[in-house]
Each structure stands twice: as structure tokens, then as C-alpha cells.
Amino acid sequence: MADVAAGGKSGKVVIRNIGLMLSGDIDRPILDADTVVVVDGIITAVGREKDCDTAEPDSLIDACGTCLAPGLIDSHVHPVFGDWTPRQGQIGWIDSSMHGGVTTMISAGEVHLPGRPKDIVGLKALAITAQRAFDNFRPGGVKVLAGAPIIEKGMVESDFAELAAAGVTLLGEVGLGSVKAGYEAKEMVAWARKHGIQSTIHTGGPSIPGSGLIDKDVVLEADADVIGHINGGHTSLSEAHVCELCEKSSRAIEIVHNGNERVAIAAAQAALQLKCPHRVILGTDSPAGSGVQPLGMLRLIALLSSLGRIPAELVFCFATGNTARLRKLNCGLIEVGRDADFVFMDRAQHTAGRTLLESVALGDIPGVGMVMIDGLVRAGRSRNTPPAQEVPMVVGGH
Image (tube, rainbow, N blue to C red; front, side, top):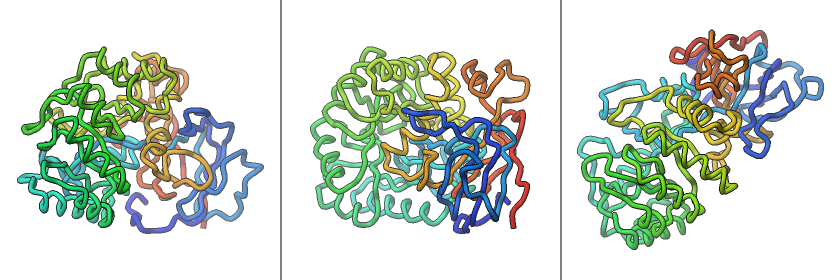
């Protein structure tokens, strides 16, 4: 069942007996609903079973009282080709992340490609190739939005127009290439924005050879759409400077697993204090020197909830609906018209928490019982999370 082709159609899917429904919407994180209906990969109904058209499904899933949430969106990854990373010499890292509840990944640059071209023709060619390749290939069913060029000195507006016309919608981390000055970055970020390309800026100390320090003043002057790994990747700016970025910029506040954990908590709390929690998005910044973390998103959620004392249902929104809205994606929220990308979770066996949300607030990651992408079951009980107390079951259909 997990091997269904990504291009297949789900038909009509009815999911009933949902014990907890997390919406992904930070303004209303928990829904009073127990049933979702999907037709050909799109949500068509959310509500109480008696109020939904559940007749004659092609697939009927009993959630067995577990939690249904939007699939997690990893806002910061560094793919190369296929499901392989030369950074750690690993194969299958994207599929493994799907077993950690991730259904969408967003590239912050294909920087780990051995011999990555840095001339303007080459970097544009690589971006277009990556965009095309991952548009055609979805490891484990995961939607990988790739093709994020690392900008270099000498690029002009027509380069960004050419990239946009070819289907490129992202810039890789500003600062990983030769463009490191705020005024240079600002001009190129503006060109990208004009042509519909969203930008992310590296924040903090150098992460790989060729990158460098990007301080708060450069971040503010460049004004990229996403303050990439605001808690460092790996080395963070000072907590005071990070909080200043949260206050003085209106852009997305991206917190990553492979960064400074203390500053991650400070950034999330600053966003809450500034009454802009909708700006917080989460990523892993993997693969990285610290490895590949298939459960990085769940671990980051548990960190922010437990040590940051932020309600778990809000932190799940950081990893789903917030990212979907800021990145202009059709997933990440459980509402009619959205892609049917779901993760079914329950509290891990033998956790001290009495419920899933309580267990996360205590610092434990949940168990994943099923993952669906576009209404298709891509995984059953996760091979990577601790075993869930209860798991959903496919009980019928035709």
C-alpha cells in the first residue's frame, strides 16, 4: 500500500473515529470534528460523521481514536539528487523523514552537490534541473520543492526572470555564495520577489566552507522573505540579536532542529510575546554535519513545547499551517480544498503523558501510526518513531 505511485488517484477516502483533530491553523488549532472526507487527494468535508457524505468510499479508514494532523512541512532541507545525500553518504533519508510525519520538504539550496557550479550559467542550470527532477520524483511520496539557486556576484535581474520563467520559485540561502553584503543581497532579493521567487537568508555563523557570518544588520537590510535558521545553523547570533530580528523584521521566523536549542526557544517565545506566532515556521536544516534526523521535526516540536512551555497544539501549527501560508502551499491545513496530506499520531507507548498533547508537552515525541499524501497511504506504523499506543486501520472500501 505504501508503494502506490505518487501519480495515482485516491478516489473517495473516508476517515472516521478521529479522536483529536489538529487543524494546522494557529487561530483555531483544534477542530471539533471526527471525520474527514477526501476525493482524489483533496479534502471535501471536515466535521462530524453524521454531517458528512461518507457513502460508498473507495477506502474507509478507522482512526481508532488517534490524532489526525496535517502532514509536517520541513521548511529547510538541502537535497541533492533523488533520495541520496553525499553530505552523510546516506540513501533513503527523505523516505525516513516521511516515517517521521513529514509530507513536504522545501529546499534551501542544493549546496551539498559535489562540485556544485558557482558560475551564473551553471547555478541556473542546477536549479532548473533540481526543480524538474523533484517535480517528477517524490521519494516515499514526499513533495520536495527543490531548485533553490545560491546567488552569486554578477547576477542581474534578467537572471531571476529567466529562473522564474523556467519554474524556479525559491532562492537558496542568501549568504552561502559570494553575495554576503546587505546592499547586494537586498537588490537581488527584490529582483527575486518581483519575479515571484521567495528568498531565505542564512542567519548566524558559517555552516559549510564558503559560507560566512551573516549578522542581524545584514539580515535586516537584505529583507529576505524568510529569516533562515534564526537560531543558527549551527552557530547562532546572540539571543539579544535574535530577539531584535523578531521585533524589527516582519518576515518569517524559521527555527531549525540543527541549531542552537536555547535560542530556538527564545525566538519562539519572542514571537508569542510580540503577538506574531503566525510568523514562526520550523525546519530541520538537514542533511548537515550533525547527520540526518528523520524525527527532527517531531523532536523540535517536543523541544519547543516542553522546554519552551508552548502548548503543543500551537507548535504543531508552526510545522504545518504557518509554513503553508507563508510558503503559499495548498497543504498544511485541514480544511476543504486543501491537499489531503495527513499524519496520524498517538501518544507513544509508556509515555508519562496521558494524552498525545500532554506527552509532547512533557518532551516525548508521539508515535506515528500512518502517513497519507494526496489521500494515499504512504506508510503504516512508523519504522522510526516509538510505537504509538493506537494506530489507524484500513477497514473497508471498494
